[in-house]
Length: 316
Length: 278
Image (tube, rainbow over all chains, first blue to last red; front, top):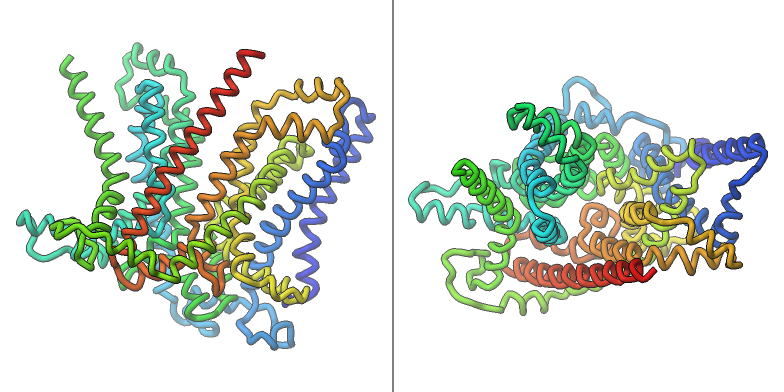
């Protein structure tokens, strides 16, 4: 259990914010002379209004805000047996974060290179995968949005949804079959005489990167398509008439216009990639270090929940 | 003219490549489910067999996980659809200075890694159930439902929001002028208008719950779902029985995608007909 003061802060702070907004709204209504607009209760009817407020309060506070704040608090506590929690030894500490940086809860003389490297590698590779996904999806999204006829588009849009609903573990498993040492690619390459020894795609993390690229391809596709679709074709025609080369059209007209779509696609892919758990577990070789499985290990192998919480926050 | 032809050929090739990349791995995996060797192998194809499906059916843990997945999926639908609906309606009515903060809070679970949602759910509810003395609530089914509902409600909300954008408030005023109460307006005007969105949200919620791994693996505690059992199997070793599982899931997915599309199109057509008649 956390100490009473922090607990009060975790639960009271969001409530205070809500009350402040309610008070502001009431003041504004009073000022405006209460003309026209009905209040929330009048507008929805009392039973529905009560349902709306209860549901949103449960979701936003009990499911989203409280657990997150609680986890932040938890990550600053030492790992203690159940009975000692809340006792005199349960003081605030930075030891879980210290462990991430220095590999020890006390000493700070050398860096925890394993975990730090895994962290930076995860960020770096996720960035690369995001860019690769963009490069793969952009031409097709552009074609579907601006060039193809509506009927073709409909067919193209329904098809890719199928692999998307097959769960992540099975998708990763498919790549294991393809790229394992006894997998299809190696067998074919050996039979064709291209190589003599099977290539260890999994050990070199190639399988992992391919699997991740595959897993989030469509997450990039849909926002891109939506953004490019609303671009007026006349703009492209005008640019072409004025003699712009094709790469000018893309770089200076289509891409700036699609910026919101590109941004949301890239954010989603990056976050999903950096937080991927199934693919690294299934496709990771013995030496692979992806950050999410480390968080997982803190919980299930080290049974150190506060440390796991601290790692989870670092991942955020 | 020939330049145009080359351009077309390149494009066709690119599309073929893209779909090859998208479906190739799944096709390869499906083929291994019917091949006899005990290591999933596509080529050479040594003999056709259905044994791997029988093995799958005999697997107790997997079947238990499957049943749990179905229950959790149903609970998540029952929880997420109303929450998402309320979230969307409140979004359209909320005091405007508070809107961006509110949006940030309720959309954040979409961007938060699933692992983090799972961990925070477990940590929070462990202490809550302990303090309130309701320890029996600290079980995997309950926590997995709550953890998944946290972000799946946000998906549902986004679906409802896009439908609400096309909601014409004139209908509401007409009903009120004709003497309907506010509650009647909600049940007889707004909910029927949102019906296609409710259907989409329920399907998306169930599928997201069914295939989720990252959140569930933490929140499920000692229980199991289909995905957590699968993950254990895949890590322990590769057998074609897993490919057989994949074939079943692909089959069910394709079938339900077709049903979903058909129902949705019928709904759209009915709506178009009603619009013409009106």
